[in-house]
Length: 355
Ligand code: SF4
Ligand code: SF4
Image 1 (cartoon, rainbow, N blue to C red):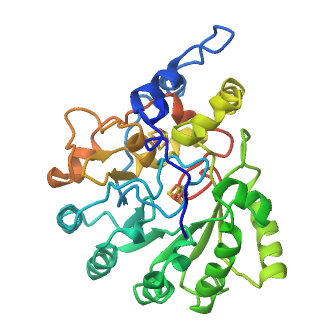
Image 2: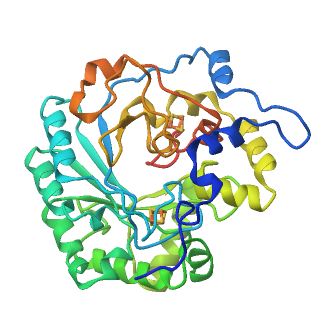
């Protein structure tokens, strides 16, 4: 599947620049007031400086190339992005994992990670190391080209945990966010995954879906939305899946552009700030995850990666220097976008953080 929509970078948009995004995040509101600093909110709850609880997940961003150009993408991914991880950098990830037995899960993301020519080699090597592999698969990639049609079988062979975005169980809302025709192709791809045994009740082949809101609002409660998704996808398309993860859109990159363009930025930030939940703050995903960029740089999470906020000075900052103990001693780098992880029931790559 192709896409003619350009990334912010392709448009040479000012918000393609991470420093400019941080300037917007720290600017006063239109009424001249300032949102409280996120770090100060953590201080009030004895959570500052925010420290890791022990790294068990390595999230690897294999590149910004994608067959889609979704409206709210925090990566600013798309067909016009050429940054991808080399096999040498993947080898450095494997070397790091060999010396880090506490990291049990490797979470592969992008862009569309499957578009990286060394994707399958990397998954095979990770399986050999005995790590649980998560692939954040956008579904349409499976149908985008003949060379991807066997991805469901490849995932099954390696026991890959598949996590896929499906913003809604109806075509109009899904296509509005992810592009024309995406819903129909996503449904077909989900049926192919089900045919391999993914997402079926009692199956060890884990298939989870991700919901994120289509506008400037917070996601509704995960449990009730999951029940509704299950009912509608089962009755409409005979599709099964395991869990629905509800994710809050963070105010960065293309979602930040949407907020600014639509005049919703101040109101959305106010919603996030007012919904600050200290229990969610204690459970943010950066406490047990380290994120690796396509060039091997290390970050506290995929969002900090896109804002080019590397791990704190003094910590190993490249995968070649990976040292789990040293990284577990770091202080996590925070900014105003972090309010997106701590609003309401919390938000992470695994959905709500407050059960
Ligand atoms: S949200 Fe995912 S599928 Fe959509 S453009 Fe970004 S990386 Fe690609
Ligand atoms: S945005 Fe990243 S650093 Fe900030 S709280 Fe969320 S996971 Fe942690």
